[in-house]
Image (cartoon, rainbow, N blue to C red; front, side):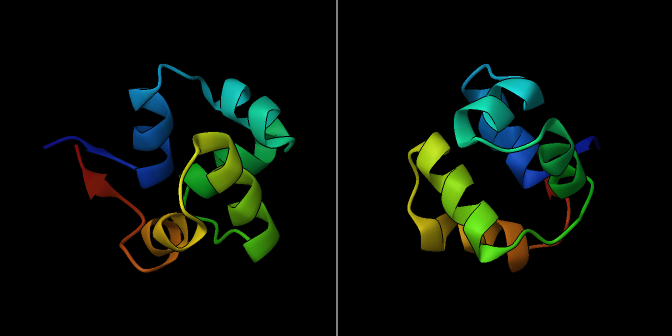
Length: 73
């Protein structure tokens, strides 16, 4: 079974590339890539991503920090 990191799955549902999300969140492209590869984001980064994805901070934080690094598609 193919697995996709939570952040990649969220942005993919919107049809965005990692670069698109980085731009919308005012983050470096590398930051999004690192998170999608398992790096734990800072609260500030989660806030920026939540704003860009139009999500609740707590919901996104739970997806990025409480779940395994990869989730089933």
